[in-house]
Length: 220
Ligand code: IMP
Ligand code: MG
Image (cartoon, rainbow, N blue to C red):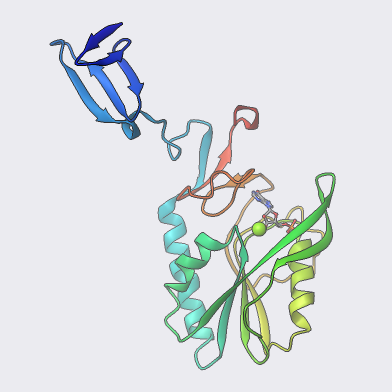
């Protein structure tokens, strides 16, 4: 325990309040902010990158260009399914060089154990009608397809001119609703649980700039 100018600290590297005190070989103490002492979330050793930030960016650019070409002259509105789609949607829309609008929905999908039951409750509805609009529903990932199938059913009663689906990730293997047609897909992935770029586990990891697999879920 060393005491100097009223501050108390233990040994070579210790965090007190917002500051980190380091003892150097010359015996001086360097003060840095606490953020340098925190473990990096993006560099978390329990994550294995599946799709890099660069690969996502170039794929999203291509999808945006396709949509720009196909929706010229239409009354386009992107509908993001919260919360997972927020990162993908905000990147994608900046590659759609057309007049357009955005809206959001939040839904809860009910599960029987770990399997989606197909029942969907609307937690947050659209702010504007979609009658006559050309809608693209934006998803982070399609797994069983049950959530999206139900959502298309619901929106299908509201008089949109067209409804298409764009998803960053598609896991075709666990698909139950085979009739869910994905119009724009970033990447098809194997049946593994992934996080990052909007996708979470218990609310965490949405901020990762890449898509990753959790190596050891027991270590979260
Ligand atoms: P489903 O297609 O109805 O089975 O459900 C899709 C929803 O489940 C997605 O919008 C995600 O919220 C969630 N989900 C499915 N697979 C994953 C995953 O690998 N990581 C994170 N969330 C997932
Ligand atoms: Mg989701």
